Structures are given as C-alpha cells and as structure tokens.
Image: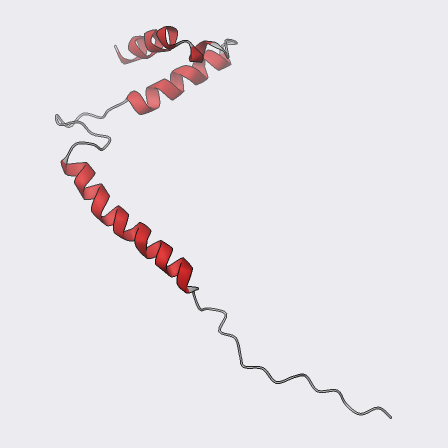
Length: 92
C-alpha cells in the first residue's frame, strides 16, 4: 500500500485584497474627477452654458452624421459644409 501524499503547506491567500497599483490608479482618477467636474461646472465648460441652456453641439453633429449614413449617404458627414447645414437646420 502506498503512503498518503500530503499537499505542500502554503500561507492562505487573501482573494479580496486589491492590488496596490489598481488602488493608486483609482485614487488618482477619483482626485481628477473631484477637482475637474466642479471646476468645469462653475466655469461653464460643462453641458450647460452660462444662461442655463444645454449645449447641443456635441450630440447634434453625431446625430446629423448618423442621419446622413442612414439615408444612404455615408460619405457626406465628412463634408463639413453639408454637415453644418444639417446641424443648423436641426437646431433652428
């Protein structure tokens, strides 16, 4: 009969521990967000202008390009004049 085989003894591993590098990266991102977003809000760099209205240009250009592509003109969003005309027509 063979002798029983025992597993090597190792220290238990804490599987819930967060690696230090990941914690540091997350902390840096947290500090950036905590400092940038209030500054952007009060400087009107955010999605609202000084008069309290939304700034739609970030979405309108994407919507106009998608509308051109869905209408069968996928190359037209690269034409800045046509893209601008569609954006202005949508906003007015």
